[in-house]
Image 1: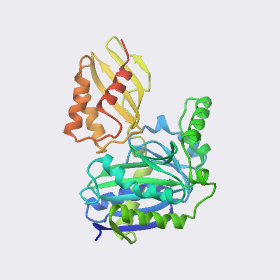
Image 2: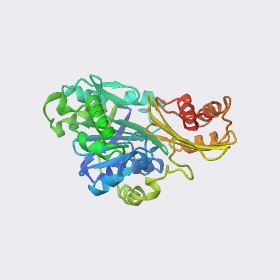
Image 3: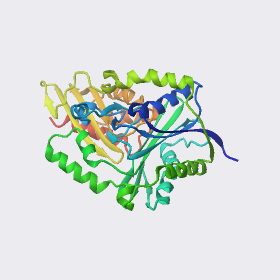
Image 4: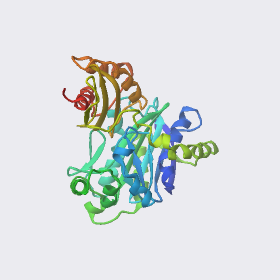
Length: 365
């Protein structure tokens, strides 16, 4: 007998904004007792750019290009990097209670379990996909699916995609880059490190058949019954309420950092240094902008395309680092203590990675 019954929302093509608000809304609904565990199958009717929760939009997305070309962009409620999305992909979005018997507590175990179905769906298409921690599906070393998870209230969300075809040129154009030479380098790297069903098999699959296969595989791998359903009146109303938020400057720019500038490392005075640095960890890019005053961390902003649970821990972590002496081990000790106190999980990103980027940002005297 299956562990649970989940709702299946087989929605198909929907408004770009709704592809991002719908799973946030259902997570809120689960927390408030208005929604049930749900699998959504959908894709955007028009292209969009989705920015990761911890990213800085000015540093990562070319918003001017997006506006000039009518490409909608927003920030999502879970981490990861900025990505171009269109109907060449099919999204699977799973939202379930964090205390559900289907849901492993550790995020690494969760990814491994909840990505079994997409892996097998690819294999059934003749694409020999495999799961690669932290959260990628790969074929012969090339990425063929982007996935991310995060907790909202009492719910855990997984979003991912089956990539039938991909517009590499558009992906490169929507990213913020320092110059065109660097853009060309990114384009080459994308094509070398990413693939699609079309590239692997030479043909496009039947979307309906793939969808039905994926639903069946999720029933098997999660040991659940999926029962077709529809959005409730409460859910439709909450989605409508979320629309203004996801288009607001407050939501798009919430990682903007107060007085801190986007300098590399600049000495403001004899006692004050402000700097920005990047560090690539296995779990993603980490960016730190730091103000150091009289040998202490006076202000710090941590952003990037990594994942961190719980989402709100990023601000609390920053506040716990403020006041740390630069000399000695106080920075790493505060970061480690915060991880323990806040039960932080950041797959592929360690406290040592965060200390590294902070020290890179401060630079040397």
